[in-house]
Image (cartoon, rainbow, N blue to C red; front, side, top):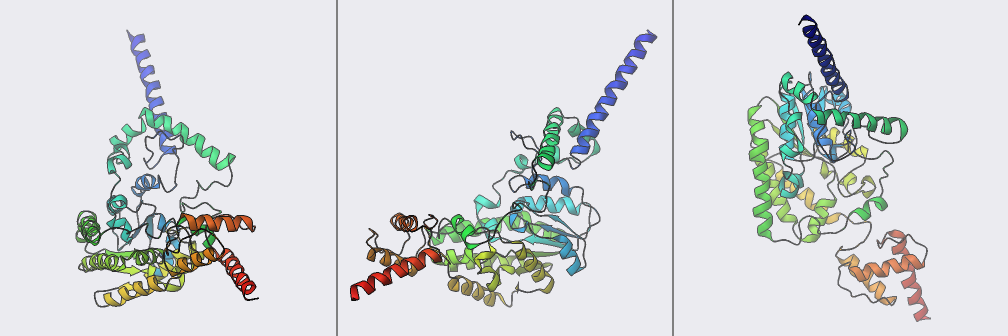
Length: 434
């Protein structure tokens, strides 16, 4: 009997050692309880698609801060150390939060549970707030599984000993070793950026990624914009923003529009819906500014920066210098919108939209520049109609010219292609006159 009891004690001891070993291994691999069940082989992922989950897990551990930055991929180059220096604060970051107000609320509540915040820097992006397809379409229970929302040590223990988590830990270790040791150059170890380290910012890189001049608001009706989009924006404020502002009256909420301010108003202006977009924006501004602890900084109004397409990787992501400009605007109060200067700020957007000149022409663009190009193509013998819309026939003609004359075949009219077409038309005209 005593030998059987001793055996059971040894067996229990071994079992407990194994359990503790499994738990410790998982804690070392996953100290923030943030990995998720997935059919992906790569669990140790910090890229744009999965970073919201990772970030949610890590924000649970933030302590000793008095400021928080929450943002989407547009905030990927925000350097909180720089912000700390210029504002004399201690800021942590939940950037890469996916741009969804419902996720932002989760991040903020995680951090305020352990920190008294003087400032919350909240990336303010009108499309993220007003488009139901962007703002809140991700189901929190799917994106943030229950076992990463652990509240107590018992919850943590149950999570750590979960068989699926243990299996994922093995994948995580292998994946981390592969990316950090075997495959150099990967940006998986860089939690501060979703962009590849070799990203190159130029008009040529950005242009192919803008597929249409109506990719935001047109063609749709005024009623849809003002009813559905504005309603979505106000619903997001009511559900996920206003409760936090009221709950933390001693915290200053600084909503920051990131520097991607040329593409959006310019395309909306071409689509004929600029006034509606400005109406929605102004309504949201006024609602937020009705609270005394709210400020709004519109760094997307910096004309020189935002109209230079060489600052963009695509239509919505700027180069690292944009993050510095955005943080400087916060510290200095530059481009701050108030109830008194609302009309002035509105006119700045109109100026930005109307005076922006696209440095290229491509499929679906509209306007006099397209008509002029089509007239030139007709004079060169191409079967193109002069409609003012860059259609497939126009693109095919441009591609043919590029292919026959040694240009990169993109179907996009950059300055080199435009200059060639101009010179060819002038030569033909000169030959006719002779």
